[in-house]
Amino acid sequence: MSRTVSRAAIVSAIVKKDLVEFSRDTLYLFLSILGLVLFITFFWIAPSTVNETLTLGVHQTGMNALFDQFQEGADASEGLKLVQFASEEELKKVVAGDLEYWESKDGAQTFLRDKAAGDEKPKDAKKVDVAIGIGFPAGFLEKTAAKERTTVTVYSDAGVPSEIQGAMTSFVREIAYTIAGDAIPVTEPAQENIILGTDRAGDQISIREKMRPMLALFVLMVEVLSMASLVSSEVMNRTVTAVLVSPARAGDFLMAKTIYGTMLAMSQAMIVLIAIGAFTTTNWWLLLLTMLVGSVMFTGVAMIVGAAGKDFLGTLFYGVLFLVPLMIPAFAILLPGTASAWIRFLPTYGMTQVLTGVTAYGLGWADVWQNLLAATAWVVVIYLAGLFTLKRKVESL
Image (cartoon, rainbow, N blue to C red; front, side, top):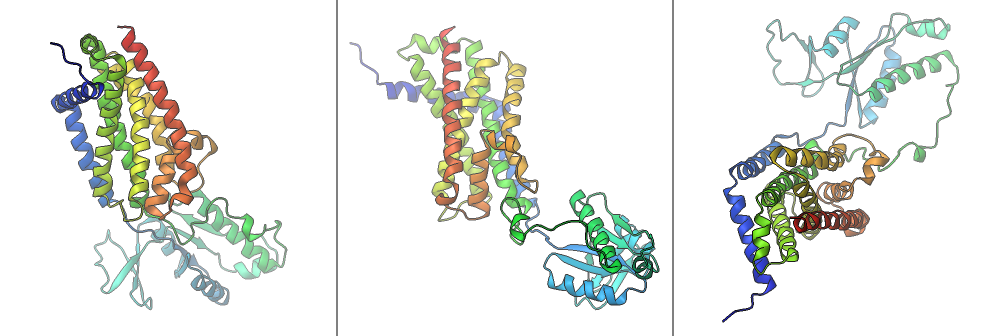
């Protein structure tokens, strides 16, 4: 007497088989566990604070009144701190890292420490990083007022962004024009036209906060390679043919792979997001929805990669070929400024924007729905492409 087996039972049986095979795949099981541990560790050791104050070292001779005026302006600014040096040589050595600049906690006393010479750390003082400085030559005021040519040296550490170096050069040029009584040869735009994109001055997020989208994508990336390897091995070993000899159909096989890939990717992404403290009482449902979208997207990628790869190296090659572009939006978040136009057309851009906005800036549905909708549209395209590619591969066996 034959008994009819439901489609749900067939799909469930294939999913269970896939989970058993994953548990027996020593390489990808190890990589998954190692990835979870490393991603969580990297997050918690990353810097959690942001220093938005630029410390500018200055050496000047005969410019005390002008320096005091600059100092008052710097004190009123939240992003600039001026420190004065007795000689240009001291300024040069501090910026180069040959000397350390220390201040007492009340800022009344300053110390220069030569670490190489064995100088001890000053007590009740804190180290101040001076990465850029300006050395004004003797007689700068008089020569500039007389419109004589003079040279001002800007010292900069190699790690200082070129934008800041250029700003210091412009700063010196503006001082010279002011002293000489000449008008600056530029027209400054209105303030509202200066900032492009969202102004994050005073509201910058730390490297740790920026890493959340990247870590979530890294987890999905590892699971893509794991599922792609499973699909590739089943195709090459003709396991698919054996499955289809049973009451299972090609549609059951594809549905099982969808459930398996989505479940595996999302579960591990959830572990990472929970461990790095991404969930709150208000954003949990948005994060769940976003990670579901991302899991289905990367499952579609895994289907394409698995169907294309003929062995381990082939699967790895196609995996890297697809995954590297998908990781670019997450890396772009680590860099200041607005993302380039071409990055916004990448499938994972919307997802990374949602993850960053929700976890770092506390944005809600009204703020991120457009990016989430764009990510969902990409999911439809990639998932259907994955289904079509794998279905063609299965039917050709």
